[in-house]
Each structure stands twice: as structure tokens, then as C-alpha cells.
Length: 494
Image (cartoon, rainbow, N blue to C red; front, side, top):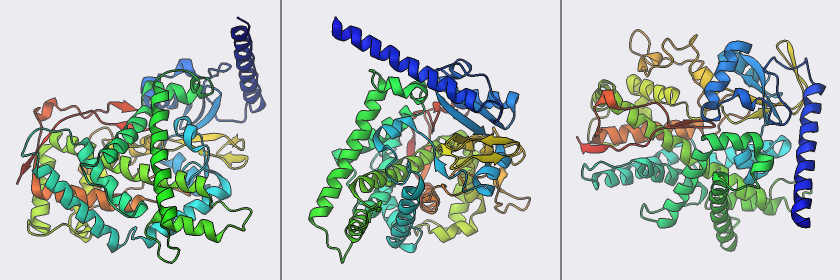
């Protein structure tokens, strides 16, 4: 009885402190921040938000408060930026001020500000610089990586042929292929498609990725100080993230035992060599914790976003067979059927390039982006955003900005074609974000999307068990990420 009473007192004290902190923060900066709904202590604007449709909830607030507004997710104070003009003005025109990384409670449970994706300040700068340089050394954006993708596309095509036209869920077919490309760089080797540990890793990634977009995932973002101690689906997400980290740690240990400093085999080796070089530097950011976290950041990002985009793309193409037919025609005319697609082919394939861009735009993979944080007190338009304030650059609102896309809610490759049928760029195409913390894997992702899609469509037609008018291309979840609905399809040899 005494123990339970003390626990209750401690919980009430904790909640009281949180409420007082929330009120203090709100009063301290009252009148300086962009407008927004009045928050309540501790719960913030929870009552004005639908956690099942958090993106749409924020877009409704935009209608009332304008393209720059403030919202409180629990005790978290967020400045929300909507539309191409506001997002560019912040992330490009004031890039340094908006270069901090905000919270992502689910991932922060594991990473705790370590690793390239979720760190800040000098740590983020050093790890980003090292990652870009090292990945480039291993063929990132060069011919070497193109050959790896082409090789992996061959394995994927064989796996699809083995299905013999049966209706299948393509999810793990695609994630195995995409993941193997980044695995060959990070780990120095690919996985066999039948490797049970590999499939387990992919399930962990998919599970934790999907959790961030569910209603419970958004609820956790608001109330994680309490919810991380409670039972619920967040505990399964933690278990999956921990499983991924344990796998990376084992890979690092293996590389440590067999390391040759004169001949790095992969990204992990290169990081281990840098650790040795900086042993006497008291301010180094190169140590095992950052190695494990950075490797997992790259492995996760290099697997989930591209494979989910392709999965969404196949569903959209079955919904629009006229678009699929035009891509097939362009592939047959430019590439033919007797050689593998090359990345240089895209310069002669404006329609296919437009379709891939439109899949990315319509699919809107990270509609709320990774949260940013202002690095100092920042004057933005007529507002003053205090140092440390989190910022949500709503990439989805840019990809659907009616000033740049004539029918933003419709799938239409014409958004990226001029009157002569040639590909045209669009300043509101920002699926990889922009500014100092944009995705440094953009080049790899573009190459993978083009080479995998064209290789698959060179060899197969798509068939759905449903008629095109019955295919639902609306997302299953829209939170941190956009998650397409589950479906089955058949790959019919051409």
C-alpha cells in the first residue's frame, strides 16, 4: 500500500511539474510567435487535432491561421510552415537558422540525438560531412552504384518470374531489393532473398515506420514522457527499433574483429578507421555510439522510403492503365527489350521521368518532413521564433501547392511535362526536403526509382484482382509518413 501511494504521489507531482512548465513556456513567449489555437496546460491543442488524420488537422488550422502558425502537441511548441513560399523562405533563405533537428519521439527513444539523422550542432555537421564523403567513395552517385542497382534488379526480376503470374503482395519483394543496394555499401554485401534474418529486419523496419503514422504513433508524439512507461503498441515499435540496433551492433563487432585499416570494405570499416584516427581528439564525434546510430539511420532510410514509393507507384499505375501503357511504349522505343535500362536513358524518356516524379509527388512519402528546430532566436516574417522552437516544414503542402500544380489532388504526369511533351522541373517538387538538412541520399533514390521501375516494366505488365475504378489509391495512414494500402498484384511477362 505504501509503495503504491508513493507511486501515485510521484506521478501527480510529475504531472504538476509538466503542467507548470507548459504554462511557463506559453506565457514566456506569448505574443511573439505566429498565431494559433490557444493551448491547454499539458495537453496543448490535443482537443483541436485528430490523431488519425494529423496532417489534415494541421491543414485545417492553416485555413484559419494562415501559412505560418503555432500549434502545441502536448507540451511541444511547434511552428508549422505551409506552402512552397513559406517552406523555401525558411529552409533555403534562412537555412542556417532552421538547420536544427526537432524531436521525433518514437525514433528519439532509441537514437537519443546520436547518429547523422537525429543529431544537432557540430555532431550533425561532422557526421553528415563524413557520411556524404564516404558514401561517395563507395560509388554513391557514380557508375559503381548504378551497376549494383542493375545487378539487384536482375535478382528482383527473377523473383517476380518465379511467382508465375500469381497474385502477390509486392511489399517485401521490393524492400528486399532496395535494401540490398544500401546494404552492399553499408555492410559490404547483399542478403539472400531467403535469408530469414533479413526478412525479420525488413519487418521490423516496416513495423516501426508504420507505427509513426498511426493514431497511436501521433498520440505518442504528444505524450511520450508518460506513454513511454505504459503498455501499448509503442512498446512493440521500441522492440523493433531495438532489434534493428542489435543487428547493426553485431555487424560492427564483426568488422572490428576483421578490420584492415589499409583496405576498408564498407561504410562501417571507414567509420572504424576514423575512430582510430581521432582517438586523441577529446571533442571527436567518431565513436561507437555514433557509428551504430548513423549506420542504422542510413540502412533504414535507404530501405523504407524508396521501397514504399515503388509499392505506391505500382498501385497507382494499375489505377491508371493508360499511364502504364505510355510508359511501356517509351521503354520499348528508347531501351528496347534486349538490354538493361541505364540511368542515362532517362534523358530520352520524359514521360517516364514525369510519371516517377508524379508518383513521388502524389505519394507524398514524408508529408510533415523530419522536424526542424531553430538554432537561435529567429525573426521570420513578422514573428519572432525563440531559439530551440521546433518547426514542421509541411512538405505535403508544397507538393500539393495549387500555385505550382494545376490539379494537386489528382495523379497527373502532365504536372511535369510542357506543351511539347518534354520534362519540366517544378520548384515545388521537394520530396527529399530542401536546405541544409535535406536528404543526402537523393541521388541514390532517384537512380533506384528509375532503374527498378523501368527494369520491372520492361519485363512485366501489372494486373490487379480489381478493376481500375475499384482500386483505392488513398493512403492507409498519413502521419509522419504516408503509408499506402495493402494490396495484391500479378506480374505478367511481356
